[in-house]
Image (tube, rainbow, N blue to C red; front, top):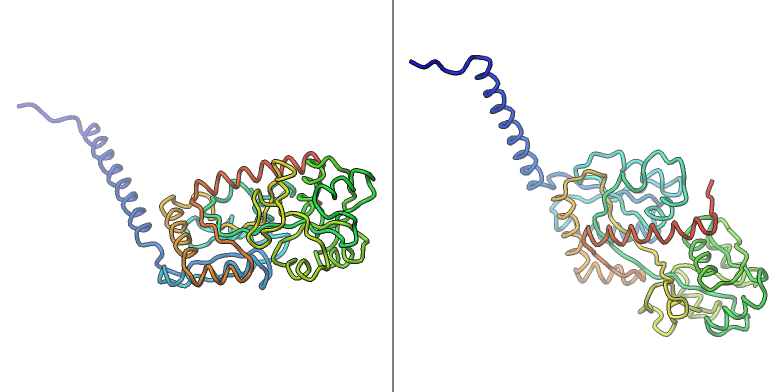
Length: 333
């Protein structure tokens, strides 16, 4: 009668069987966890103080998501460090879909290409989920300047290199980068004057101490409609519904495209199934009439792209901003 395999060999086979069972069990547990997600509250970190456009967007969307998920969706403000404090906290959070961040183009793009020695990797520590919203920026100038069109303004600035200036809310901010891109594509030489915030820039723009500012359309609409400043062009690739009579800068300067946007990101290694689920639910939320109306009142356009589409858009934005920063030798301390 033939004897069985030696005991060590049989033990090796048994070990492999048990390992396979453990792996299969782990896979089933992961699938089960993802299928039950979410089974507790979800937190959206906003890396800015309460009351701003990013915060309002987060709260409008969170309210609808809570109804769809059947779980609380809590917005938590963790401001400071130009958005880096809130970003760091999410980068170090578990990759389980329960902690997300509503980045803006400032924190997801500008910080990534201007700030060095961060405690987190602004690109590789996050996975893009969906672009939530966007609104265009608008170039406004002092109303007493003798330029009535973007072509006339470019000609005016070219005629006196270094004479005309533009203000921004600080070195390395989106308005600064938007101004640098304008200088590059229009082939003009302007003086950049950084301020601590947009309000003092606007005061000096109206007073004629600086000549141009690029800022969001929603906050500048009252000044445009009352004639305190003159709108020259919007910074999106196409014209804005908010200012349909104002041309896009791209009409005169092909390739110019900078807008302000928000997007949900999750910590890196968050399971793809959860990322897709969040994106699908946000898309659904952004199609809801009440959500659309609430965003529209703030001058914000809903987007709701898929994860892959958003990733492509984000990487393209990173490339554009990085080129501007390097060409202009922008350094943020």
